[in-house]
Length: 319
Image (tube, rainbow, N blue to C red; front, side, top):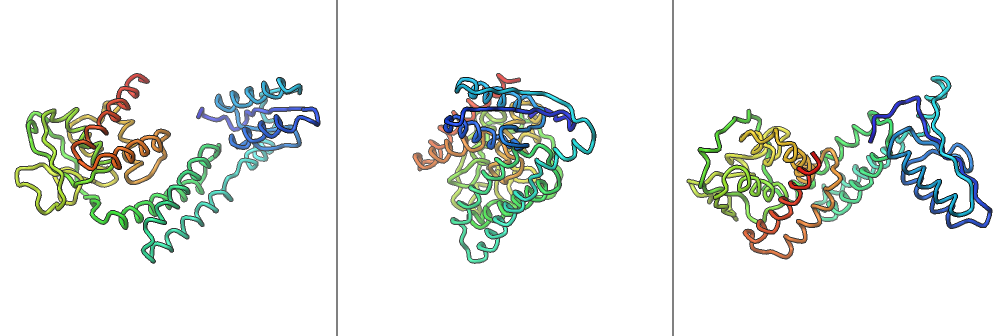
């Protein structure tokens, strides 16, 4: 979203014949989804932004095509008190409170070991939070607090469902020369999910093209000559706030690649939560489908790697 100027606003003024119920409802739903404030019947307000302007213009076109009148106006607040009044119309604190209360219920339920149910509820709440964030034009402490709470609950649920997930180490990430990490055996936990799949892809694509990946059912049986990743005490695992994919990037000086940096944000979000990424839901569905279809981890990595290749190429093309 564009940087918002607190004194500049957009207004949509519409008038429809009394019998035009369907177009009126269609427009209302679109404006509600965008988080528009209602000043009075037929008058809607949004902070000035490119996306908001496009939405209002589209709705104006719909109104006119339905036989009504519509005007999109851009204006500046006449004084600071008016601007503050308008800002309060977009206060999402009460909505964040409802999300926070739902998260607290999940946290309470976890004491009864209801991990799978909590995970399903958490996905729903995550979608609600993402939608709310999308129309929070003037974010404040409430958003930050709920985002932190969401990350904490997500981590708790993940730990309950997958107790073998690595705990973040507190150490410096060393810079390594990838020429010394060629034709190696790399080992990680079997039945990989996002971070392990993405890390294995990163290893073969950017670090060690001839890497042999070993899938461990028991990390205590990791081969002595293997480079472990994404489990406790592995050569490459979570460090501080970084997931394994990010640690590998930093270790081998790949973090300056803008496309990989975007992928890192996506992997981080799907693995431990945090700042939402638009492509997350789609990638999660694709990988989940591949995981259900391929019980063989080598085949799963092969299929997942195609998705990561496509995603990386798409990010490169947007540079």
